[in-house]
Amino acid sequence: MSYVNSWYRTLMVLAAGGFLLLGTSCSWKSSKKQPGNTTQSDSRPEPKLKRSPYTVGGKRYRPMGVQEALQYCETGEASLYNGNNTIGALGERLRGMYAAHRTLPLPCQVRVTNLENGKSCLVRVNDRGPFHRRRIIDISPAVAKAIGFHRWGVLQVKVETVSVGDGPNRRQKD
Image 1: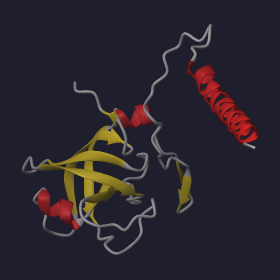
Image 2 (image 1 turned 180 degrees about the vertical axis):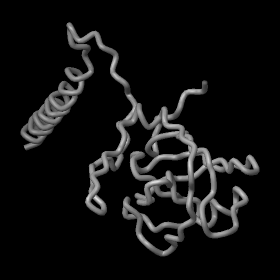
Image 3 (image 1 turned 180 degrees about the horizontal axis):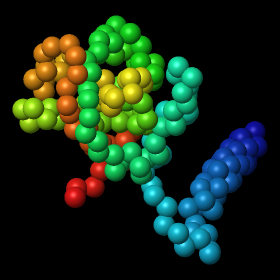
């Protein structure tokens, strides 16, 4: 009886080792470099961005691509808006330092600078708007306070993209 048990145990160990070897052989094949594939791929994950076209008031908007957005810098009017306790275009609650832009991919981070006093701050763009033709960005009350804009209305600002997505796509220093 002990001879059958030891032979059975040996057979089970060999079978388990075979399955282990079979499972790891797949990873060995995938780690080999493919001949003829000489292009170096970027190991960074592709950012999850909201870039789908949309229509508001009969006008169609097409969000920018990542490279175009990283080069974005514009001067124009900013308006103050309060989206607190509402849901933005990404499905997030709008709280704190946030902004809305018509064509930047969501999310992204921009530097908003008050041209009257030179104060600036970093802002997460996570909503769509403004849909007024002269305005380039809507800013939250927290952003307005940080850059010294305490009244309702519009303000001349400079908006410059710092990064696109929540990942590694950052603007190169000039």
